[in-house]
Image 1: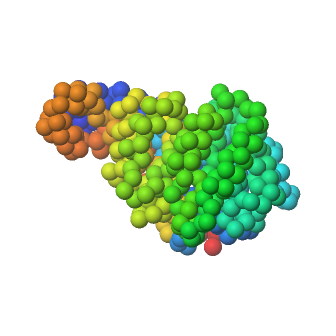
Image 2: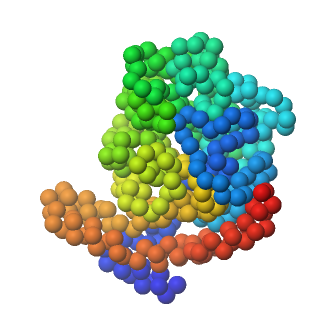
Image 3: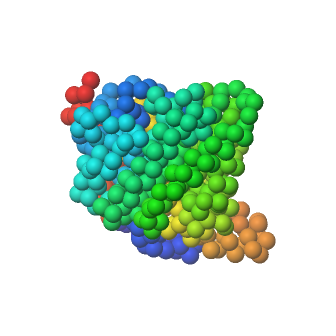
Length: 412
């Protein structure tokens, strides 16, 4: 408490109210992805992970059943402060042994997830799963030239809208449904346009399903490339942004889905200028879309600063998206999501109004100096206070190691 009071005074010298920052941080919801706990395997298929994505490592204790995954999520959530939602993929349907393909999933196949969410007072977000399935033909789904393949995945998308509305109505919290397809080619294609026209038509058909736009926010996510899809991706950034603006849905950016020299932090303000809502999947790409655990690195801080500086906390859907099987999966969850919140706090403690004024006055000397000064202000002391008010402590690894000894070792 004494250190916090000291930090409070230091930040006040820059015109920053730490109490307001903590209060605002408490109101920000982060949607936590379920797939970190089981290496993106899900419960509906025996297919290997595909679609240009890959999970590496064999750390013991992977969740193998819905019950194990839910227990691990509970453990992770107990160590993550602030408001949370759970972000599900369609492949996590719980069918009770019934053989149900993805074009036939129903809301009742997610009834246990709704019970889980309602018991914890959280919302649910959703993602159609257009990968790791026999109907991904020649690396294509919604853009396939095969009518049968395309119709299968269109029906899957329609079912997912119905399920998303079910989530929103049952939990009383709006659901973000994100569409991402892995479609593309390993080598240079002869025809780049036709797959994109088919993708456009497929999206139009999926979105023909009526839904309550105050309860379901449909987003579209682009990608630059993936393993086995190096030369051409159907759902490029240009395609997805163009489609979003035409269809009136929400753009979503994953900060691992762009060229290495592109920064999502630089793109947020551009999208906010034209879109009421913007979606984010926060990850950490190392040389490519490698989905490493989020750290408190420069880009994570810049992303959160852009949200806060532009007064967009209520306009940006923040979700995490990474998976690491080389370390304790629960620790990966906790470390990554805590760092998202820590970066948000860093942004909330920045004297952004003062810095904007200096920019408008063209006093770039002072702007640089202030920007560097705030980097070494006592963020950690305010973070500790925030954790204490959420009945948590800064160190969590002993709790995770104890859970590992009691629960995870049984799964080997």
